[in-house]
Length: 269
Image (cartoon, rainbow, N blue to C red; front, top):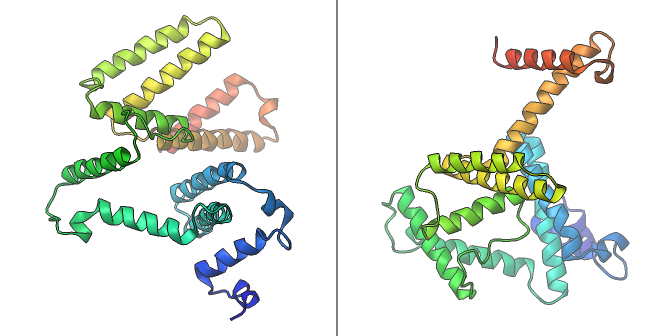
């Protein structure tokens, strides 16, 4: 099969996608935009596509999920193409690396260890293996290796989990709630924009800690809150549209009453 045949083969699978990317990045015959891209310019798209995967899952839309997973896979192919051109790695070496990691981290599946473990024991074993991997990378600090590019709430959770492993953690959630109240008071006492930003960040950080103690994913919780806001505001818009009006032709009191009506409707009241 020629390379053009592969490009147009609807069942070409990953080999087809890799060849498409190679052709797009060809310095002589490729796409000018694709040729210009770097790790740094593609990284924001990678993050965006991961969130769109999460959004499709949240909406339980399998057709969209199929498409979004393809978009996310394209990001991996993009980065590995750039890496191969620079002599760092290839798509296949990246696949081999993650395969090796999964085998090493699951000795109870691929090795001699017993599968008769609790989920808690398996989590402890997983953390032991990851700690050894960090040591092999010469990461000496407890917080080393927590990626700077993570979404801020997710990075806050990971930093707090790392610190908790060595005992730097409140013993129970009541202490975290006390800290939330303390941070709210400090936010209320802020005066300058810089103080507001600092105290607001402190409050978000401790709220992430509260989420961790209660077993809540703060990113998922905020996504759900965003979705709820959209639903209720769309209820307001629909109610006003039924009277031939738009939100800017209403006022806060009316829209607040419609918001309460949306809440009652969601709860079946």
